[in-house]
Length: 383
Ligand SMILES: [Fe+2]
Image (cartoon, rainbow, N blue to C red):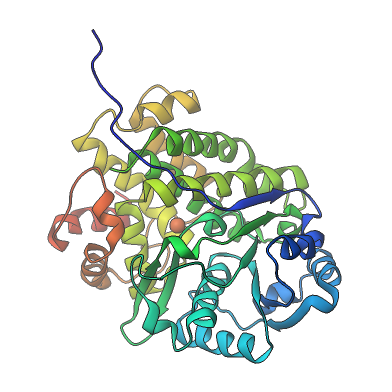
């Protein structure tokens, strides 16, 4: 008699998803549904100059556009959020519309919080401490990567401590995610590759997390299938609207999966690499993931059997090879050495990784920096 019971779980996904080419032109209707009148648009200078999809969004917003803040940088920090929140307040905005990749979306989440509560975003950092709904937030992702449009976390760089910090709160889920593949048509292949590998990492880490559950498993497995089929196409053919649409949906599914199942040691290391060595998030994950998977497999040999089946592979360790093969196919560096990381920074990366909450959910428990130093040296050198 089979007796293995499903452990108890809960799953939360409060974000409305609107998907389709050209859907960015209909943001005004989404604002109306949320009871909002004046939108503060958060983006970066590259996207703000990026062409037809952005123009269609601006035209659609018409007089409801209260202001545009295009000063978000990669790994945006407290100062940028505070500046944006002040501008939004001065403009009389009652909602935020974020258009961009993970840094823009997370900055938008921070602006929503600072705009609602006043003061600096530094005063509101924490885990589930916000008292209720925040400033309404509509998000248009421009990469098929972070999935941040459906998550309850904002990663914010603290320039004083040289560390990325998490604002994790059920009240910072965006209200609406608008998935318009037209925004991705100009994305350069290296960015398509690294952000796509971030989404693959979300799916794999959701599958191996201590918090995995049947709903997150279903979303993560669908992500891997879609990315395996379409990420190389989107990379090779940047203007392929079908490939952009499939990868954008895939990254969204992965976001919903890991927002509930959480991530693991790979993300803890990637956050460490981002803070200490400024390695872009997706690239750091792409380099570290196959090694973290093999590290986990040593403790739990059946860990990736489900993923292997979904990908038509024979065993779990072949999934780690599949991930590494995908990175090579997308022409990404596969070692930290090739990514320009100094070997003598690994100790600091290990320290940062072990203070990152993501490590708590890794299926192979790790607590001390020394425990992951051999793994980090492997990720640095490649073998
Ligand atoms: Fe990520």
